[in-house]
Image (cartoon, rainbow, N blue to C red; front, side, top):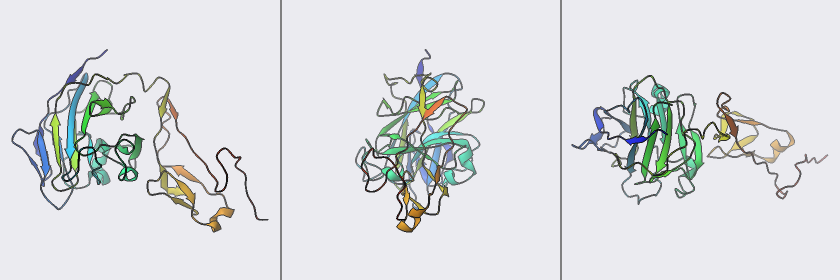
Length: 287
């Protein structure tokens, strides 16, 4: 079994947004401007072989420990193709070189972090996928990164506990340098990077190929019938009005089911107003 080593990183003075200041130790970064979102990456790349662990702690002023921060806070891995650290990287070419977790989804912003969901974004995704229940990260929560450089996998921890036994990402490139980075959304928000002890619970290297993998996605805004209305978190589709209910309508998922790796599991729930749980679904007609 591969031993997990902790690594000690510093934020890079040469790869940082104009509105982010780094302390003299290089371990703390704070957003000082009021104009735009900014990011910063580490000065050192993640070692190329083996398994490594490090941590980030992101805080938003005025938020108590564990409360949702709101906005777009991203924690992840990038390549050195990213050369601009100002603005919303997830909406331009830089997305093609980043694998990151957003601290919370829009649907989980008003809920506690034990129920809320984070989001995952990688180069082959058009938009972020909602992750597992309880994966959201609050202000002051310690986010651990466990990177298997040899196999191109990344697991996330929260406060030393593994968020999901399955890798959040399993397609990290193995032939280029990879760097840790963070995106700070609100003025005064900060990110600390550190190398504490490796958690006692370690990820299962083979968990993602043994048995089923969960498939996390949402409904597509682009591929939806004209009579269907999607909820704000894109996890629910319903007829918009009674006029639409005389016709069948369809909607497809935003993400494709990955057919090249393992076996995958997902669930759908269909309900009809006025029918109790477990009742047969049948077409109702006024004629």
